[in-house]
Length: 96
Image 1 (cartoon, rainbow, N blue to C red):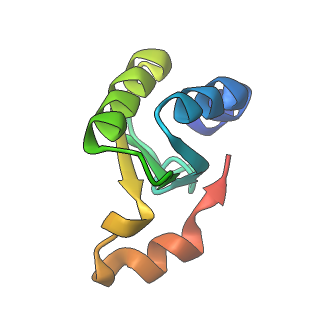
Image 2 (spheres, one colour):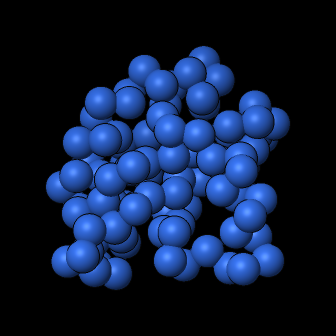
């Protein structure tokens, strides 16, 4: 099953995990979204943090998503987007 189909089929569980770690508005971007991934590709998620979200929450979400999806995951927050990549990522990102 392509990674994007796996993610869509697990959408509710991914959103639930995100809520546990004080994040919401989960979006997918990168090679998996474009269906250009390889076996080594990670899954790139863009999330919005609640006011009380910490770095520990983001790291914990990353770890739990990797365990749940069986693939490497990158978590990026809106505030952490590098200015050179921000516009491209925001244009590409799609809600799961």
